[in-house]
Length: 74
Image (cartoon, rainbow, N blue to C red; front, side):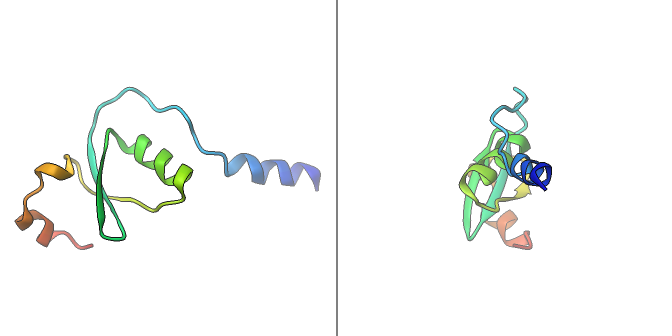
């Protein structure tokens, strides 16, 4: 049983290092949009702050037009 507790605790630990790959993504959570340097950074942020950002585009949020946003199924 003690080993089971350790494996549960280990699986909830957030990563604290991501590759230095710049593949920007725009993600959305509860109506808020946020640009992340890459998917790993987004997943690390979600884990650390208990958020559920999901990728909506593979470019910075700031350059997505209103027309493009309307096409997204959020």
